[in-house]
Image (tube, rainbow, N blue to C red; front, side):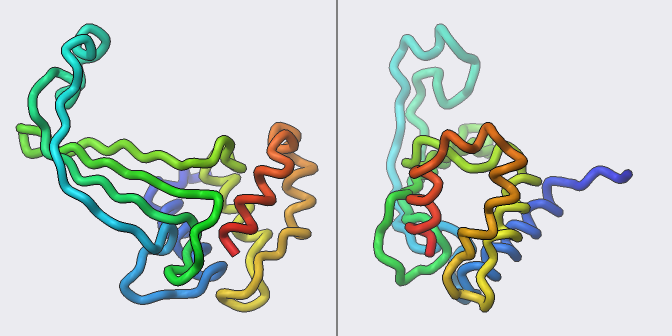
Length: 160
């Protein structure tokens, strides 16, 4: 069986997000609404004792930071999930990224699991409500996800 590339996963995830939240030209598929800020970052001197990462060696590194609300509807109110993505512009012309979510747990351990969740919970019509009841088979087959309980409901409520 041929291995699926990360790019195939990315395309499938974007397609799934468009199916779930509708297509909104000019906006990202997920974390559609956000604000970008520019700044500079300087790591504490002690950081270089723990890593060789260029951005943690003490030099002044230009950064951009994007704060966003979860979900794929740009006009939706803020919910439980907020994202923060920081891009460090390294002296050699390369970049490194740090991406974070405010939620404590994420319902998928692999890209394949996330694709399955998106497919199962897909609304009947693009932009319609997510079908949370359809997640039953996924949850039954993934006991490690059971501990999400209310956190999973909160994430899906914020996304719809």
